[in-house]
Length: 193
Image (cartoon, rainbow, N blue to C red):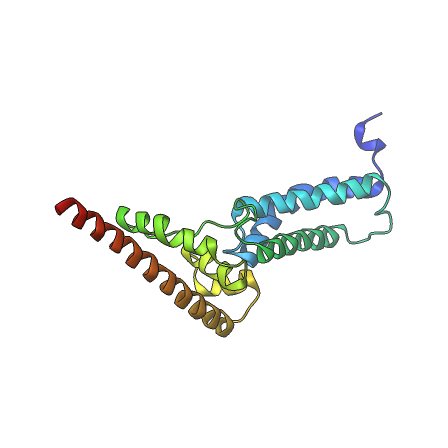
């Protein structure tokens, strides 16, 4: 008795769908959700969708499904939407492997040092609000359209929240720089004196 004979009709149809589904679905997801989901994430989501449908088929839950490829696609799209919702809830803590990498211009070492030493701690100290998420995503190199899409807000709201956040950061950064400058000036005076 062959392995295929032990499979139900739905499981057999599902097995036949696999090559075409795994060839097409990651590309469709990538096109639909680019640049928010990476290529690897789209492949993982398609595979997870197939695995979930296969598990349901094995338990007999899908005996009434007539359009199996459509059911696979719907499952896959729902998983992609779930991943994006998780990213919207907390883009900083969400698994960064799912998010597409955004090509960034190479900053100078001085710029990186200032960003890491001064700006990032100030962003991290902000209350956990949408404004904080906006400046975190922007500091990672995302464009306005991508940030608005990730957070599910329109561009006008994005611009208002970013403007408020940047003003807040400028005030704190200015204070930190002035305090640092005063300490350095005092050290020089004490040293010279």
